Amino acid sequence: MARRRQLYEGKAKILFEGPEPGTLVQYFKDDATAFNAQKKGTITGKGVLNNRISEFLMMKLADINVPTHFIRRLNMREQLIKEVEIIPIEVVVRNIAAGSISQRLGIPEGTRLPRSIIEFYYKNDALNDPIVAEEHITAFGWATPPDMDDIVHLTLRINDFLSGLFLGVGITLVDFKVEFGRLYENEDMRIVLADEISPDNCRLWDSKTNEKMDKDRFRRDLGKIEEAYQEVARRLGILPEAGSRDMKGPETMQ
Ligand code: UDP
Image (cartoon, rainbow, N blue to C red; front, top):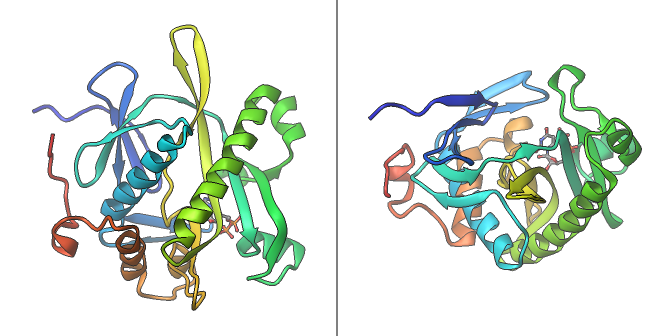
């Protein structure tokens, strides 16, 4: 079978042309980067776990009527998604101070914020994804004011839902990053959740011990990275059927 045409290769994923118009195949790699790709590495089995975790979370979000690009998982490392026009903004939600907000504003890591805070970053590697205000986003036309209303509304719902879901399995959702896209269907345009939601773009702390269960283990050389991602999947009840033995994929199961 001819290999699908590759459209884009990012730091952690590859996008291929999908089987039907308007679809894409999203392939999850084991590659990991941090600090704007200055630190590079491989986390064995990460792609398999993130594929599962993102599938699970996007399906749960669809159940509460959050529109997403996810269609279905194809195999260990690939999922079928709807093609959307990505809005070039990273939307970060913070419940507890960590990472850049702690550094920038001098708030000690672990401080619960007075309320959840949403921040926007302009997706531009050359500029190091600078933080921007909604004013920049609408003035430069990266998104319209109605797009931003939808994005903020959806983001707050995603945060409330995922905070509760993770808390139920003993994990604190400290912060996370999401991306949105425009989905064109007939004459209509809808803002939908895109990209992925996984320990690569969330901060997840064990609720009892505050142990980190996310990419900070890679960023800060804390070790036991594979184990942490696996533990998140295990608590969510979605470890791959054969456990870590089938973590290398891909294996089509259509
Ligand atoms: N994040 C991400 N991609 C980025 C930057 C941040 O997924 O390019 C996530 C990160 O994993 C964390 C949240 O967004 O869950 C907030 O990250 P922060 O601004 O603290 O940046 P960091 O110091 O982690 O680079």
